[in-house]
Length: 278
Image (cartoon, rainbow, N blue to C red; front, side):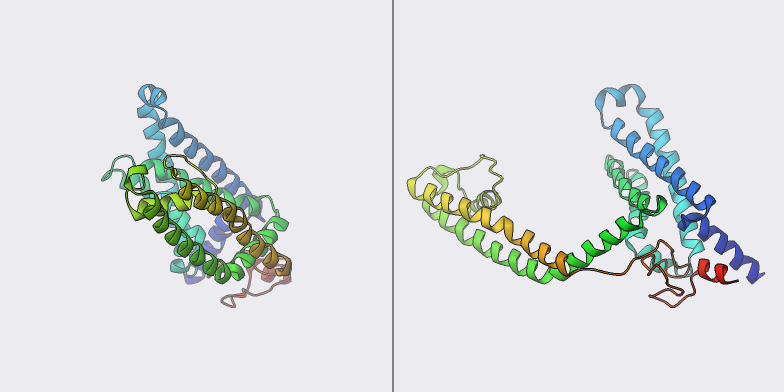
């Protein structure tokens, strides 16, 4: 009985998580099309004219998609060896967030529009279309961002100090008469200026304030280039071996080396390799 249950889980895992088999690829393609249709339905419902004419059918479609994705989410949890591991993974959280807004809208109306987060599930297209090279590039980019996090944290902290100081000085120079009604509002102006966004809803009127704004604008161009340079350097150093799309049945880790025989995270034998060796 236990053996048949295990076989059932293996078959279900291959269909839901793998894109190597015809059944798995068909499942993923149908899933991606369904996701696109569900996101399109939510977007169309946000248009007042369409909502007035077709609001009820669109809501019915939305609930149908939500129930379908709920069943799929439960099946994903059932066929992995460590359900909690998948539930707290990136895709697990995205899959959960893809269904919860509809149920939550029963309590807080309007939250179902957050269902557009389902578009994140389209990231699986790289696995479905076997675009392994794209997965490798994504892995390198992730590695570079992780390596840069301390430098970027220090950079953001420095910018935060700068905008607080400049905002406080601008509050003293301009004052409430020119729209700088408080230090927080002045800090908001400093952030808008240093990022070169320039909304224009508040601007300095005095010569001293305009001079300080000009200096901050020039600094802004240099500040914007800093995080780009940090990540670029890390990208130059980041590299890794080729990876495959094989997913571990136990922990669902899917960034293994191309020639891996066991999961690098939990040590579980990879199913396809066992099958090929038999």
